[in-house]
Every structure is written in C-alpha cells, then in structure tokens.
Length: 221
Image 1 (tube, helix red, strand yellow):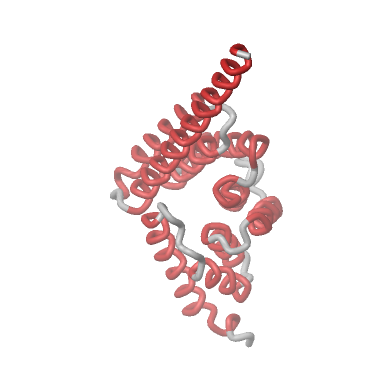
Image 2 (cartoon, one colour):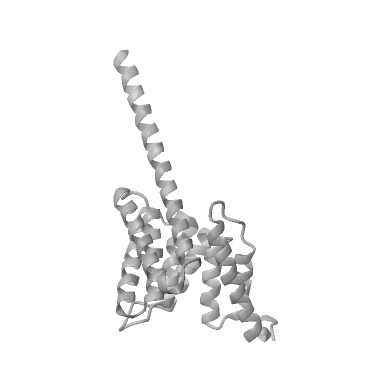
C-alpha cells in the first residue's frame, strides 16, 4: 500500500513538473514574440538585422532545450526570414533556407501552432524568395501554403494579411482587398498587442495602395 501511495505521489509530482515546464516554455515563447515585435516595428532600420539575429538566437536556444515544441522553431524561422528581408544578398538566401527547413521541422511536430504560422511563414518565404536557379521561390507553393494557413485559422490577422499581400502581388486585387479587410477586423490577440498594432498599420497601407492604384478592380469595373 505504501508503495502504491509513493508511486502515485511520484506520478503527481512528475505531472506537476511537466506542467510547470510547459508554462515556462509558453512564457519564453511569449517573450520571444514581444522581442520580434520590437525588432520589427520599433527598431531603426539600421539596427534591424542585428535585432532579428538576437531574436533568432534566443529562439534557437529555446528550441534546443525543448525539442518537442514547435513554437520555438517557428519563431526562429520568423526571425531568420525577417532578417533575410532586411539583409538582402546571398546571406539572405542562406537565412531563408534555414527558415524553410526550421518550418518544415515544426510542421512535423505540430503544424497548428500559433494559428497556422508554420504555413503562413512558408507561404511568405516561397512567395518572396527568388525562384530557380537562384533560390527556392515558387508562387504555386506559396499559394498552397497560404491557403493551408487559412484552413487552420480562417479569421487570423496574419494568415489573411499575408494571403492578401500575395494576391495583390499576383494582380488579384479584389480578392486581396477582401482578405485585407478580414485581417483588419480580426479579433485582438491577448498578449500580442504590440504585434497587432504594427500589423494593422501594414494592412491599412495595403488597403490604401489597393484603393489608390486599383480602385476600379475593387469596384468590379
């Protein structure tokens, strides 16, 4: 009987330790999200590359400590791809490939994390990276990934914004405006107020461009 009680107590202690660890990881992921938002929306352009590198390193360390969690991999990939965008050149392509591989690893763990950010980020990468023979960019793959993200999170601000941006680039202006408006109307994300504020500005800028340059298409003319 004493052995059974001791065994049960040890099991409860293990469950409690696991829950505490999971909560700690959640807190660390939230901190990384804030650091990325600060790098993306509050850091001067001249300092952005270094700021994104710091976020990527922070996420990498968390990923190494928690190999069964997909979120750190996603944030490392987001930081790398953000850094690639501001860096340019062959170094940017190296970061983009690293980001793609990290996202594919995260997909194998849990593709649903962060409201489909695995697929949103993959879609953005395939949309913006140069195609063969320079890079791995592929507009068809970009569309497929972005649409996968919308299946997982049809009302998500990022899923709709990145799809809208892709559609606008492809000349599908009316459809782009629909998804941009859906993104703008998305419910606030608790704890992500800094990212939401920055994303709203980007969405509004996209809508303004669509209205100014492609108003006839939006009006169905």
